[in-house]
Image 1: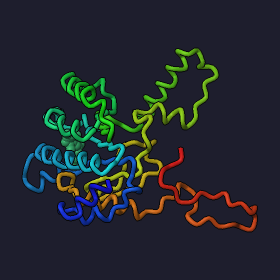
Image 2 (image 1 turned 180 degrees about the vertical axis):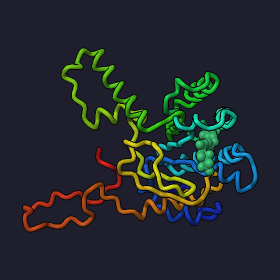
Image 3 (image 1 turned 135 degrees about the vertical axis):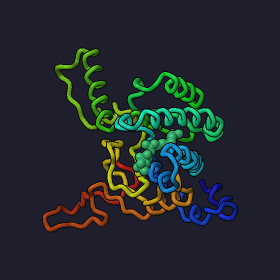
Image 4 (image 1 turned 90 degrees about the vertical axis):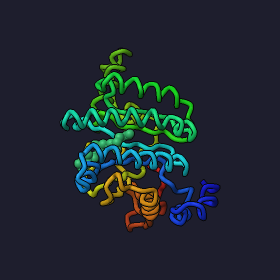
Length: 280
Ligand code: FPP
């Protein structure tokens, strides 16, 4: 990242913003709700699918940028369980765009050390989509720089339900159902995102102030960045601005930023100071 900062300062149009970032305080895991494709198209009197198509450029930019600056994991909300309610032609186009993206971007994923990890109820996807996802997962499995989670047919509540069912299945198999007791670690390690740090930063485009059933468990302590920008207009500069805003935030994880002693405290303050990564 330091090399990139030095090189980029002069050579990239967003270099000034990049140069302001503190490389050691970048979010480890970034999650994005890519919203506003339909409105982007409507404002141009185009069909909604034109917005999704334009949104692919922002996907490509976000994936490459995050990998290049050293983000460990990026999770993109590509298709929610609720999105099946959309017109069939729109859903079909989304699958087609996803397949085109996977095919066209494979070399970029490989060049940047990005491993693909689709998350969601993947067994309900069309066979052709699953096949392409499986192939890309296999081809990129060795990518050690960044994990790209694509949330597809994803719902946060469904993920928690799936986690519980997995825990129950394992206990049944092991014959330990009667004595089963579940804690936060058991649940975290049964989610689709098991093994990853929780998102530090959740970005949502198009100005809606809601989390839309996305990573409900994992975003407990995420910093939220909501921008009015519609997803197809989301630029690298705006991504850097989100990171800068994140670095200005004070993360307390329920503790205090300036531990003080109250009259009833002993001499040892046991308050939590500012931390950068959530303690699990
Ligand atoms: C939300 O905008 C966006 C989606 C439901 C789909 C996102 C898909 C892409 C960006 C393209 C394909 C993805 C990949 C990963 C290749 P909306 O349609 O809800 O917009 P609106 O709220 O303005 O109607």
